[in-house]
Length: 380
Image 1 (cartoon, rainbow, N blue to C red):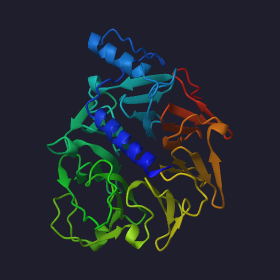
Image 2: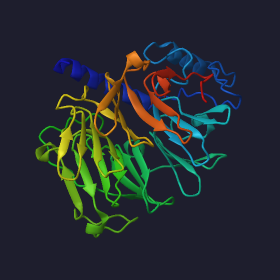
Image 3: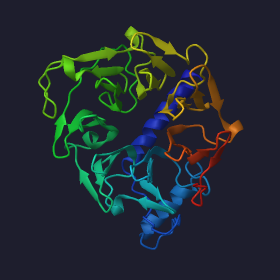
């Protein structure tokens, strides 16, 4: 791909993401089994028109799909499957019922960028308008800080101690379910930031098995934080010091400074997905860049998942999905029925079903081939 093509993709992506912030064309909740009707009588004439325009746009709509762009897949402790979309709110599949939730139902925002469950069974959602908590009956919303960018959440985890870590367009915030605490992280000095959304955006967060936090940034590499080597108090505004931090950039071996996805596998390796440098595995000392070595096609990689058998899955935009068995990679694309050029999330549920979400909606994998999941399934 030429530099001009890459530049045009970046510009288009920025315009599209900015347009999402003002979009409120979510689908109405429907308690009947997979009965989604875009002509819901509860919508105003203006809303119906906006919804029709959205569904008639060939860039977004695939006939019969649950939504046009699915970002997150999560299974809670009760076995419910949650599907977070890029603009159409939230879906929950439980039993034989598919439900849609939007801002009209109390959800903070329509773009879902993170889903976690706390020890009490509440499910939390990161959105572009703050944090939402769902207790099984209703939503309660939390504003991170004043300002649109501060509430634009891009990453969300609950660590082993029960602390929330939130990555926003303006940096990192801690949350103890009552108060938010800004958590400034040092920024590496880089020659070319290649930032897409914001210089301060934290696109992904990982807690490793040793309790260290890894923050993937929008153009400034990775910032690793070891709480044991720091004097920063947990759950309070930190003092101005950088003790306990390690910075990873292209200067010291990181393949790319724009990091969009992080995962630690069962062997302790850190898998790194970037926007322009492909996929790498880091063992704590050295990087193996599978894209640079020619093993993997595609420079934009993410959606890491390790299945029950220890296989590592991830997606490479425009080139399909890869599965790594510890020795070799297997690529799946349109030849295997995967009719999308961008997968963002991958999950094997407790029943052993594989789910893939991205542009074009939701897909399943039966062990050999992929197929699209419509409002009518197949779910089982």
